[in-house]
Image (cartoon, rainbow, N blue to C red; front, top):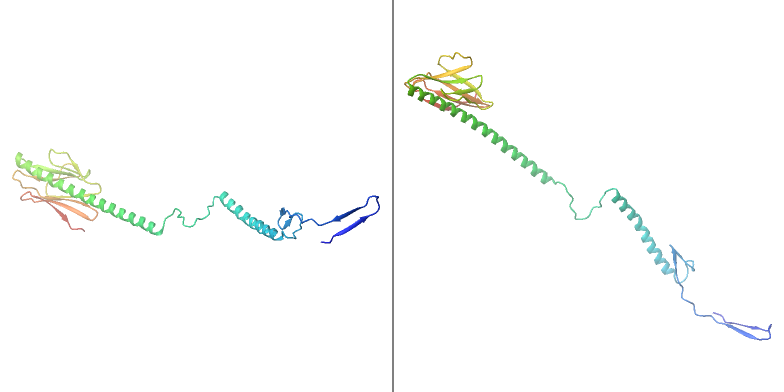
Length: 231
């Protein structure tokens, strides 16, 4: 920095002015925008700091659009996936396991219904046999012929003096008898005599592919229940 000395002779009082350079005051930098610094025009020792500020502002500006996108996703009800987070749903193995369980349940239900149906048919055949035996005992006890009756219209049967019993739903009924027919249509009879003998005959109960036959021996009056071969 040059030093200048000026002498003034215009006034009666002479004076000399010595101008010396004072030390440069530290610059104060005010960031007014990206790449601009107040009072320096982007040049001088603060240029490095201006570059740093420029980078900071650029980074801040780069994150703004991302924030706007995230905000719009939240307004739309879309959740950003979080690594390691398991969302509700079904896997293929879970679906296969459910299908297997349903198949097993259906199989068990079918077997149960089939077994119940077979049990009902067997129980009905045993009730028919019991009614026939009761008729034989009554004939021998009273010394008079007794008749076991089957009503084909109502699908019921009864020993003398007993309440009629019905057959399971869906069971077919067929009667073969050598006894004289009843005066009422649709009524079949099997008779027993005081000596224990019978008019003979059989009663067949059937459903689906299964049939049970109750046979009455005409000579002895014995009653047997057997499974009839499928046709």
